[in-house]
Amino acid sequence: MTTARTVIGLEDVNFTYGASPVLEGVTIQVEAGEFLGIVGPNAGGKSTLLKLILGLLEPQSGRIRVLERRPKESRWQIGYVPQYPSFPRDFPVSVEQAVLLGRIGCGQPRWLRGLWPGGYSKTDRRAAQAALVEVEADDLAKRQIGSLSGGQLQRILLARALAGEPRILVLDEPTANIDLRLESDIFDLLRRLNRRMTILVVSHDVGFISSYVTRVACINRTLVCHHTDAVDGQVIQDLYGESVRMVAHSH
Amino acid sequence: MSEFFTALAEQHFLQFALAAGLLASIGCGLMGTYVVVKRIAFIAGGIAHSVLSGMGAALYFGFDPLVGALAAAIVSALLIGWVRLQWLAQEDTMIGALWAIGMAVGILFISKTPGYQTDLMSYLFGNILLVPERSLWFMAALDALLLLVVGAYHRQFLAVAFDEEFARLRGISVTFFYLLLLVMVAVTVVLLIQVVGLILVLALLTLPAAVAGHYVHSITGMMLVATLLGSLVSVTGLALSYGPDLPAGPTIILLAGGIYVISSFVVRAIAHRRAHAVVSSTRTGSQSDE
Image (cartoon, rainbow over all chains, first blue to last red):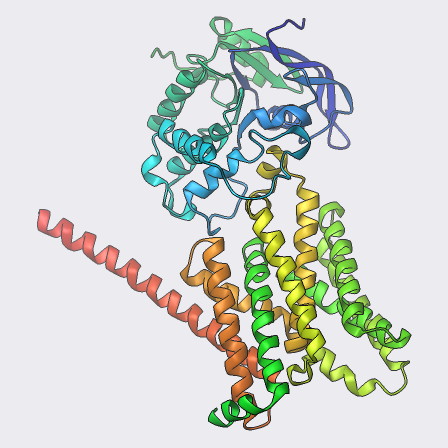
């Protein structure tokens, strides 16, 4: 059901890369202010779902609306943090420059977005600086992107996504390559950000994210949603298709 | 060398050659930097070599070869760019094929053009001493165009070179800016063909920028250093070749290649020494703790 507060809506979406279906009959509404966790086994379609929402892929059938428009028209209002940096680590660019790229397309008329010539405005520089402060990485501004550790790089990717002042933040396994202590740091930060933006986060770690998110979407070709308190051993077992050992934990 | 500078004061053709070298350096610094950081040297090579088809056709039909070169460069940039963006498998083989087809077409046209066979060498290896004055104006105009476009769209080019997926999410048309980048590389190739010819053009496009990348770590810095380095090797190469009457193009390339090889070893040695210094300082540090 679509309501006025719906920011992302998928209706009966089907997608395939070729022979076998990756997503089948996926329907989900995400409301403003939600913190949605997306979990599921490897190759279950988690990243594909994000790419559809970002308009990087087109579904074969079904309807996707983001902020009441087609994904391609709305995606500049989404901050995206990829699982792996999709750039060479030795690229000659400073942290500051990389984060500023997240400002491209902000505050320009619709038909000129991405075609606007020239450099960055004072507002752009202030927003990039604020994003770096937010992820506690402003001391890294002048460093080369290649000199960062995995955890630092993850923060910079987040800052780049935040620099565009997005309404929705989409993260693909943001903590896959960093250790556990940093993982809870990042999720504490996401919890703070959730006060002003909708967040979608893909994770393989169901137990861990369930203490942060408001709702869990389980994807394994089809999609089932649960409220966080309902995620127990049975749900996880159904999803992964085999017995999964869980460790009871509280935060 | 001094012989060169005495001649330079008197001979117009040497002054033109020097100007051509300096004008070419601007293009080589600007676009060479993008070619190096985006790692599209192979694509640039394909564009450079298929330019021969346009030069050959222009000769055969009686146009200015430079105009033919520019047209062929732009067409092959768009074609190769399209292959890179749309071809799902073996894009490198496809680009290699276009590379060879372009050259073959050019050589066939030239062989059927009466009286022009002797010019083939100057297209392949350049002849900076024969650059006419109107070519200089043409080169200056192309440089101005490159500066204008890079100045206006440096953010978009950085975004597309750095991270295509993210650029697309920020509303940048990656296809448009990628093709624009290749067209500008094509323009630069035509600039440089005057100086070193189309076989050696790739070296002058990439080597100064690659050396710059050893020492400076920003796009703008690389552009500046690569332009200065390009000017240095083309002027020095011209001067060195003048006395013993060597062809200028290969002399310039040998100089650029030598600097690149030496610089690579120097950078490696520095990195080795630094790593050793870090390890030995932590070891002495931990020993003093005990």
